Image (tube, rainbow, N blue to C red; front, side):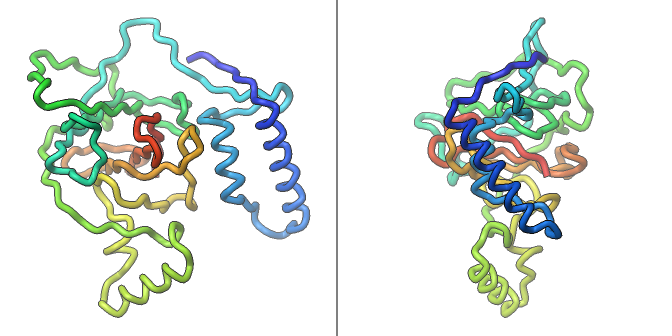
Length: 262
């Protein structure tokens, strides 16, 4: 890993300075309150930092650590394969009908474009089933974290309705949804919202933190694309027996993915 420094534009530097000034004034006026983060400020900071984790406020450079390969690298391993016929709700590129999710089964921190992340390095590849051949000699991972090597199993996909939690909804709409669930004898939080397990699409749970806006490098809000859960048949363990979530750009799915652990 090597350190890469990227000079901020004058406009981005002035924007961050203005946000800092406003935040200091806000804290000074609410000395007894908890530290307050404004969603729009967080979104702007995320856009400017673009996945970098450190900002040098003397030189106004964002700092990221990126890998420099010095050998042939570590083989990626297959984690998930989806077929278009099983997951029609996903936006499939033209001519592609297989999605393969692979990762490097080692710990990674400060991956390019992934702020505050620690876990396997993930890649997604769309392919055409007609062009695929059976792998004769599957590479074995080197020095793999055992909990990042899935146990082979088959999917049995089902369609389910997944609704957002309170953080993602206006207060009045959430109250209406909760009242409806109560009238039908349903626990909204356990039965309808942010369903657990492996899922394509749906809504992310923020059970370990408050809502963390996940934005694409282009500034557009990213949406939950895929959730990979710990335990169950694959017997994985990510994020202290949590969930690894892949977010994609809501405007252009070809933009780099964002990773998040809860």
